[in-house]
Image 1 (cartoon, rainbow, N blue to C red):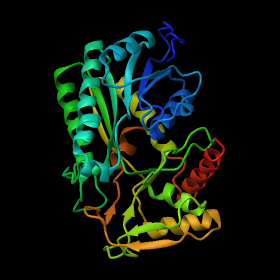
Image 2 (cartoon, rainbow, N blue to C red; image 1 turned 45 degrees about the horizontal axis):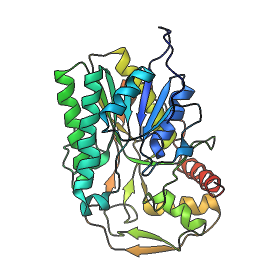
Image 3 (cartoon, rainbow, N blue to C red; image 1 turned 45 degrees about the vertical axis):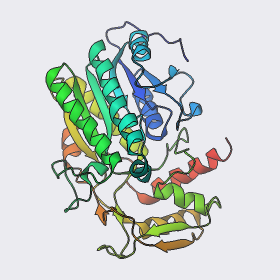
Image 4 (cartoon, one colour; image 1 turned 90 degrees about the vertical axis):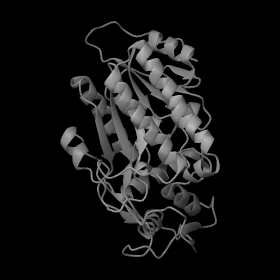
Length: 341
């Protein structure tokens, strides 16, 4: 646990941002994006799925739980925290179906405790890592932020409940927030500083690269009879570094207009099928992945693509890595770095 790097009292300095789950996949990229943009940052992570090596040595790190009110109070005081980016939580959809109470505990109850601590300490800005799973199986694609939210699993519900808590809390207290609903996050830091390190990950590009590198025998394709160009599911893949950049810009928007809260989709607005992705992995690695055609999984929509109009009109977000081969190449680079750790 770091006791160093006390906050400066220079009034011109940007305020400290506490990143929960900052040792995890997306959170660690947010930490890098904040640092690169000159924001003081601190991290809390219980390291259940995160990795200590993912947090830079010069970032104050606290190993602990986001529901630990006493620890949060100490962090807020020691670091001068004025904003929270909340990534900590559980994210595996099938697991949420098998163990729903874990998800309502980790994602909903603990988020409630974190929001409560933020209100008690007067932390005015909160950015929440939400998900396109809140839309369930939408009747339209692309989906915008006003598409009905009808989750079909506890993971989606646990996130939607936290969105509602933030909206209600913002109405009652001096807290503004930004909900960012992610589509399919992939890739890794282009400079090789972080990437997806979780064992047994379920994300398609991660799984496909593990198969290409011999860590898996094949890749399962769940469903080949969807109403899509090639019959396989279509998803909107967003580079994790572009997603992290959106968080930094959203933070600036909250600070600039403290009376306003935001809810925005995070995607590129175009989709690739499962077979498109596997073909791209073959192309980037110059290898051929064995594909196992399997029945559909219950509840998987045929197509889930974001309408990014709102985020593009609200913040000056200009993605730098909107290219499937680039996303895969950066993820491949990280897999090779990870093999050496």
